Image 1: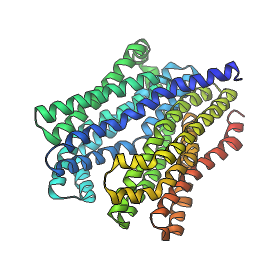
Image 2 (image 1 turned 90 degrees about the vertical axis):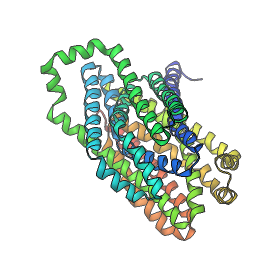
Image 3 (image 1 turned 30 degrees about the vertical axis):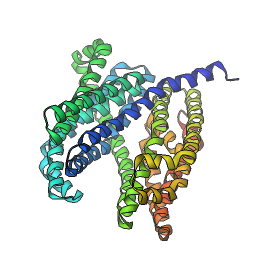
Amino acid sequence: MIKTSSFEQHKRLFYLALPMVLSNITVPLLGLVDTAVIGHLEHAYFLGGSTIGAMLITLVVSLCGFLRMSTTGLSAQTLGLGDLSKNLLVLLRGVFLAFIIGLLLILLQSPFLDIALTVAGGSEKVQWYAYQYAQIRIWGVPASLANLVILGWLIGNQQGKTVMWVLIATNLVNVFLDLVFVYVFNWQVQGVALASLLAEYSGMSLGIVFIAKYYKNALKKLLLDKQQFNRLLLNKQVLRNYFQLNRDILIRTLCLQACLLFITFQGARLGDTVVAANAILMNFLLLISFSLDGIANATEAMVGKAHGEKNLKELKRTVNISLFWSFIFACFYALLFAVFGSFFLTIISDIPSVIDFAQQYIAWMVLLPLVSCWCFLYDGVYIGLMQAKVMRNSMIVATFGCFFPVWYLLQDMGNHSLWAAYSAFMLVRGISLAWHFHYYQAESTYA
């Protein structure tokens, strides 16, 4: 029988994780709706252009994921400390940095888009519509990055339901405006881009309204006390630590993107069927992330709070409970893919040659949840602890000491070498972080 305290811990994890799982499911829907709307226009180059344009914006936002991670960890820790002023300053500092990055990208949009589209390639019409799409969406980057901060701050403050409703509202706005701009006003690619831009600003506004409603007095008090505000916001040591933290998370993200891009590019070298099959198989990774990222997000908030309270017992118990449920969900996905993997392939594609080829890799999809659940979970632990240097080092070792060497040694196996390398990469990340936490971090955190 589960002890009451342990039962409450399980309940708390699910209270935080369930909204995050639902939130994670809504995120790809935004891109799916855009694709569905554009995909029903008469020419393929509309879809090609919007896809490439969206990819460029998504890449920028993904690389700035450090804004979400650092905000979650820092806000969770200040929540544990019970210091509301520092908690709110984490939010303000993050939003300020998000707008700086977003405005710089807008100022540099011409060279950025020219270089990016040259690298992306495509026909003249695809390039034209990709430029039109990205030229509009780029004005929404400040809001997109600010949303990373706002949602990260809400997660850190264990406001999972608010995150869920903000994301659902953002997607509903996007769906409604997509239909109006494309089918009523006939704005085609520009309409889809404008709908996404306005949806991003709507989501940001909704998040700000919620924060202002519940933290208005504390924000007002902080902003009126200019001496304390400047001392906390512009503290040189705090700023130095903040930028070092974000630098380490950025390096981690770059390593991950390098591996994923290598799978895409190397698959393209192996043939059109291979790259198409790998693109379909990537959807299995997306499915895995729905639940495992949701649990990891809840773990970030709970670990960060326990760390801020200097409560090692609570921290360890949170990690153990999170490990248990991560493994349960991993087993569920492994079984799901083993039984229904081939069926999922037929849903995603109706090209016989691609489906037949992709079916050869179902075994890797069954294995991946079991070997990757640990790195999802421990990433959440170390975000909560704000030990980004450990995450960075683990990712560097897994990328250059595992992924590329494994691929190189097994490259005669063709596409199997890519999935073997990625599986080993995820496993090494999990093992290295688990080793560091259980044999070093947990015992020395409050020593």
